[in-house]
Length: 229
Image 1 (spheres, rainbow, N blue to C red):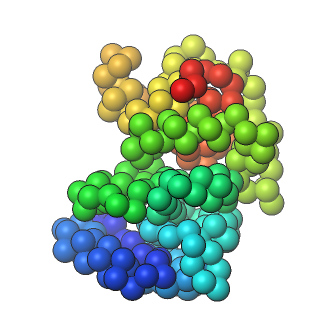
Image 2: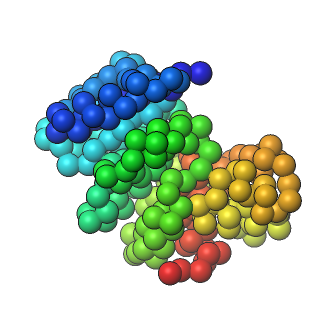
């Protein structure tokens, strides 16, 4: 399947560069470009891509509000947002999590890492850059306002079962998800098949009413299943 991508960045050279890398790679295609958040929302509604590569600071509408509108609307249900960040603006990243972003990418990333990140987000298979994600989640999960991520779609709230309702194996899988491991890595660590690991993750998403692995990871950190630091 060809992964369809919308690229949103207010800097033309950056946007063209990302588009060129994506278009030059088999299995990927750019279906829309946007120079601000409002255009990103419009492009997502029009093209229904698998992934929107979203800058944060843009005119007219920033990437945070655009992410919130894309992930919270039925019209763009299933469209996943990959945030571009420099990580010197952590407050924006926290806001992006609350808005429903599925992952984060450093702006100075290498082309191969960019493509892998898009592929991973499109598949919903793993958190990005585990070492960076762990740092981000460690900080985010223990902030006073971290609970906001638990319900990324406030218009349709649903109570989550307590972690005590999980099986011992599910707790193990949840802990490894929070450490940034992919399904294949979880399978290797626990001595199970990748398909079984994927099934456990799917059950966790359902039981804990989470939209993706980012939310699972935050819940695990807030429950102190993963040591900080």
